[in-house]
Length: 171
Image (cartoon, rainbow, N blue to C red; front, side):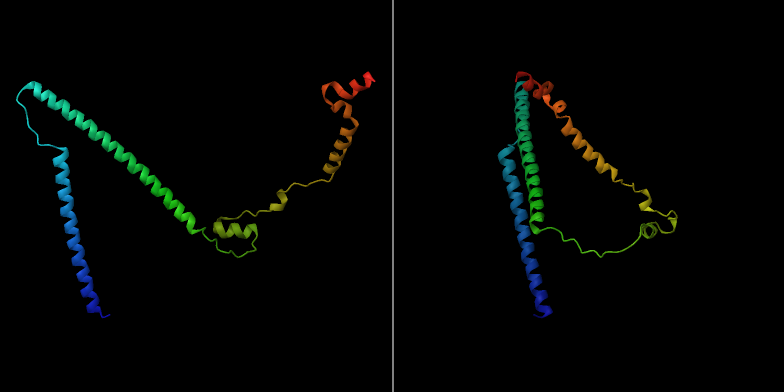
């Protein structure tokens, strides 16, 4: 398709869209006028004080009705916005998890890493192995003694003042 043909088609589409937008605007104006005629009748000011008070009461009642409708509409909008956000989150979850890139393994000492991060400010060298605790094998021997101790003192460990002693006294 040539560029002149493409530009001609584009201009035709824009003209049609412009016409449709004008029609929608006129329809919206007509709808607004029809709604105002239905819900807001022409104002007629009465002459007496009693009629003015009745008119004010009627207007206050209409204002309350409109406020209730506005509140209901606002709550519907808030609810629908929340549903839209939830659906967006579900769509994002359904698209799949984000793939994590495969990282290269880099062998670097703690000093080199800190120097790369902090630059020339890093002057303290870290010896991470110096801070580790020494584990002794004597700890395992204490556990074995505790097991042996439990077996020797089974009478003391039995509940209710040694049930074993109670049975021995009856026999």
